[in-house]
Length: 192
Image (tube, rainbow, N blue to C red):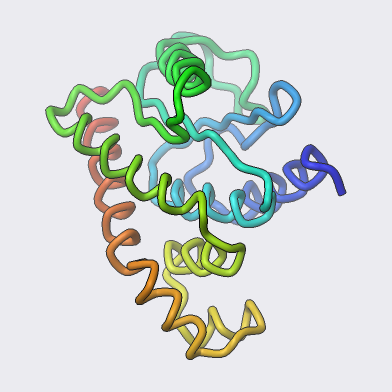
């Protein structure tokens, strides 16, 4: 199955299982996709699920916080306008000119540089991960236990524990959870 078909399949799966999606993950150009989320609760678990399912293909990920100046469309993430989309596109274009594969833009927070540096460290390291470690990270972000991860992936609990320890996945999960909280705090501030 080619990348676009794998991507279409996983986006449909993520769209049907996520509570925070306002406009669904939608393929826009070739292998690019976008979505509008109301909150970032499952943002990182969605992204890691997508990464796992398109493996070994790599993703550049641009997350933007900003306003949408047109009417929100609930059926597709296409046909809207606003600085959230401009921030995301500018960051994605900047990533294509550098080695960066992850960016969060549009944050007014003084921590935005720290967030991007933290995400860069994790994503740079994860570029060398095997599919199982990516899958374990995705499931940890969904709150799955080691027993469930092992059963779901068809691997031993020992292999799951080893990946968590060697990949420092408990730490990366905490970082992703905190970044999601900070994004939500920023969204709440801009709604006032």
